[in-house]
Amino acid sequence: MKTFGIIGWKNTGKTGLVERLVTEICARGFTVSTLKHAHHAFDVDEPGRDSHRHRVAGASQVLVAGGQRWALMTELRGAPEPSVDHLLAQLSPADLVLVEGWKAGTHQKLATYRKDSGRDLYLDDHVCAVASDTVLDVALPQFDLDDTAAIADFILAQVAL
Image (tube, rainbow, N blue to C red; front, side):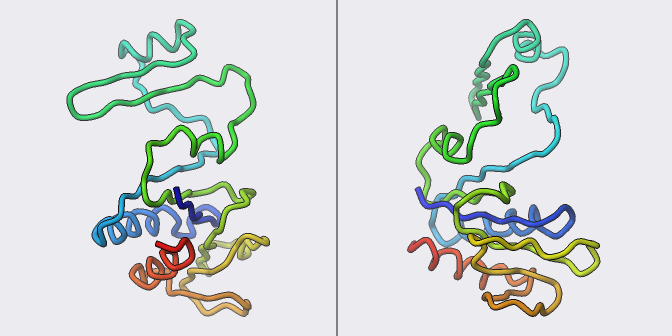
């Protein structure tokens, strides 16, 4: 599967951009999956539900399935956070996986920036473009944060789709 990352500090437009990119790229006939990194404890299960009760009881994995979707929850129980590669291997095949977060990952990435965020632009050796609400002095391709079609064109070219 082809992978491409969208990174940036909190409130710089990552999630909105990923949402728009999924819509845009799917409309072009590609299958897209996403992988989202969360820096905080999160729960996709509700207390009181049977699946939550199974996890609380100590199950390492709980798979919930129904007529419209299924979800597999894995409890780390003190094990280290899995790598991007490990998590990508858990996904069903798709044309493209958009990875939101994982700044330290070695996959190609586009960095988001908003001038009012109060943070500097995040750059590393794997950032190959920037999407921003202002023009920046960087030697990388730059896109308006709201120009979803142009950003999609760039990503698809970068991953050869």
